Image (cartoon, rainbow, N blue to C red):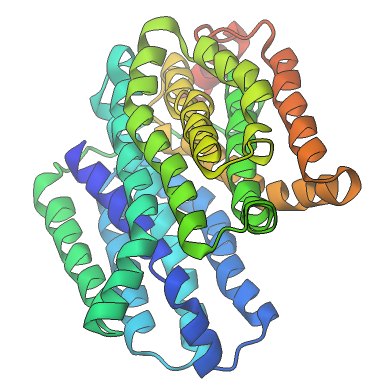
Length: 390
C-alpha cells in the first residue's frame, strides 16, 4: 500500500508540475492557446488509448512488470520537460506521461485489490488515493515555490529525485506476482454488469464536476469577490485537502455500511452542497463550502474502485485491471464532458442557476442506483466467465 500510494503521489505531482510553469513555456516557445490545449489534451488522449492494452497486459503478466515499464516513460517525460526547448518534444513527453500514468494506476489499483480482502479494500484504496490527492494538493505550489526561489531547473530536479525514490520502491519492495492463468474477463461481461456501470457513471460525475469547478469557479470568485490568483488557489487547496483527508475515512465507511449506501449519501448531499460556492457572500463562507465539496466528492468517488473490485471478485476472477480500466475511461470522459456541459449550462442559466441544475442532476442519479446492491452478480454472468475459463 505504501509503494502504491507513493507511485500515485509521484505520478500526480509530476502531472501538476507543468501548470505553474506553463506561462513561461508559452512565452519562450511562442505557443498559441490551441497548442497549449493540445499539450494538455495529449495526456488525456494517451491515457485513454493506453488504458485497455495496459489493463490486459497487467491481468495476463502480473502487476509489477507494467509498473516498472511505466517508470521509463515517467523519467523520460520529466527530463524532456526539464531540458527541451521544442514544442514537439514537449508533446511527445506529455504523451509518454499519459502512457506512464496508465501503467501506474491500473497495476497499482490491481495490486491493492489483490492484497486486501473485501472487508478492508475500501479503506486501503482510499488511503492510496489520498497519496494521489496529496500530489494534486502540493504539486502546483511546490513547483512555483522551487522555480521562484531556486531556479527554473529546481522543480525538475526534485521531480527526478522523486522518480528515483519511486523506482526503488517499485523495484525492490514490490513482490513479483504470478501471472494470472485464466483469460481476463471479456469487456462485454464488465459492460453488462450494472454495478460496474453505476459506479463508473458516478466517477464520471465526480471528475466532471471537479473539472468544471476548476474552469468556472475562478472566474466567479474573481468577478464576485474580487479575489486574486493566490486567494483562489487557497480556496481550491481547501477543497483538495478536505478530499485528501476524508478519502481513507470514506473508504473505510464503505467497507462497513456498503458502497452503494455511501454513494447515495453523496448524491443526496450534492443537491445542497454543489451550489454553495457560488452562493456564499464572503471568502470564509466560500472556504467552508469548498471544504464541504471536497468531503462530498469523497462520498461519491471513494466507493467506486472497491465496488468494481468486489464485482470482479464475485465473477471468480482476478482481472482487476480490466475492471479498473472501465473506471479509467469514465474518469476521462467526465474530465472532457464536465467543462463542456457545465459551460453550456452557465451560458444559458447563469452561474448560480447552472450549479443548482447540476446539483439536481446529481440527485437524479439516485434513480440509476435503484435496486443496485453492493453485492450480488447475476448468475448468467458467473456462468459465462466459468465457461470461458474452463
